[in-house]
Image (tube, rainbow, N blue to C red):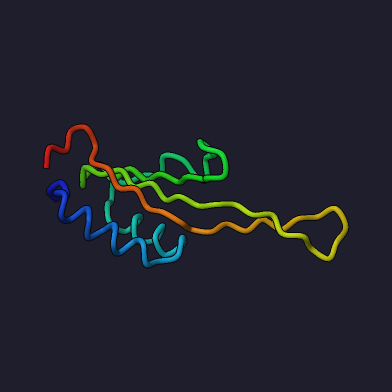
Length: 98
């Protein structure tokens, strides 16, 4: 399969933006047989949790960005984590010249 050009990456970005986090993960896993998850919910910036997929056959890196909120529960001293899917970042890999 050929590398994705800029228009195809934009189309993928628009498609992923309208999905939930889990749907986006499933879509990315099915796109590239050699694809892999580089990291999952890695806190590289304050308040932003990032999950990155590398799709080598498509020459693309996709980063899914979430925000995190702690919600109180009925139990004392317990919090429930809630993640909100807020952004998708799609970048070409260094060897993708399209």
